[in-house]
Image (cartoon, rainbow, N blue to C red):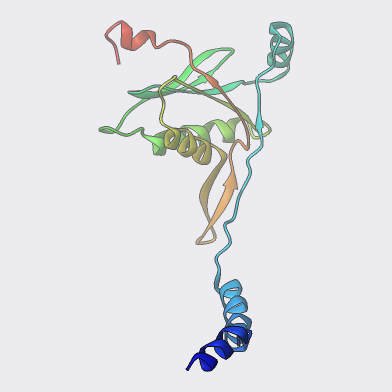
Length: 173
């Protein structure tokens, strides 16, 4: 019995990995084919000008400098040169982006060459509100010959901080 146990210990064990390799040859291509790769889309944002002189010169050249101020209780669509165009109160607890888009469409019809818009947000504005505002001010759906197509509104988007909300502090809406 002693001899048998010595022989077993002294022999090298041989691993048979061919079945495992066959499994990997089939499994790896299957997993690669069925994998869903994430798609990343990038929006190019423009920062507002740094100097006040440069900003004033740019504003003088344009017929309208469009801004959307996003507050907790309303959206304000404003021309920086002339003042407010429309104040859109919230629908319940959410912002009324449909009315904002209708107003932006009217502005686009009046000034078709303008492509810039600035979104100014309060400090505590949720990220999804920013994304919805960007998406809704960039593209819109229009009916052409009975089919819906995506049309460009204001694709050149800049973002920034909104001025303090004086209407809410004063008790107004």
